[in-house]
Image (cartoon, rainbow over all chains, first blue to last red; front, side, top):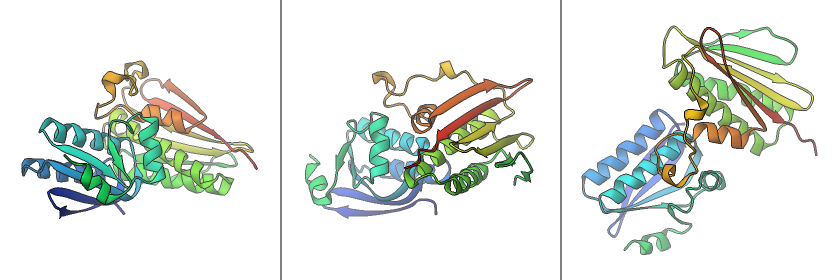
Length: 114
Length: 146
């Protein structure tokens, strides 16, 4: 299974539920397209729910970083929710864990947007 | 699609097309051999990811998706280790030219983490240039019996 993305609105926060594999090819381009689409529509508060992401490779990490910089450069905020242990470990060894604002709980993550 | 060839006992080889589908094929092949060798679940994930990153380097950066170039994958099961060789037919790349992905100025770069992850997940990594062209990486993971 590749990646599956669905978007919902919680107040003024756009929550993107991501499931499956974010790897080079279809997975990473789907995430890139979704984030660019949201930014182009002026959405400034984006919460990526990665709770059902089973696998992410260096290309997927690259898309998370690109998404983060794109949203931030547009004056928005991108936060991460529900990292699995493997994704968390990957972000830690690549020193990106402290770059992202990471949350375990959706309500808390939504409240953290300013 | 690649083909299996007979090799020394405990070795499986394939010659794969330069496509992203081959990345999946190589990952599945190596994980299957590693599973039979008795590697624990967490190591299977690490080995699979190292193979995926090495295959992406071979297909994308080495062979540049060329329909005329193949990626040679060989996986050998030893008594205490798994050895994986992945070789492309590209122009080669300079490992020293890959910037350190952990340095402050590179943290937010889109790419450049593949080799770092391979090193992090495998016990040994060797890279050598092939003649007349190509790059060969050899990945080793030791089996720690409990």
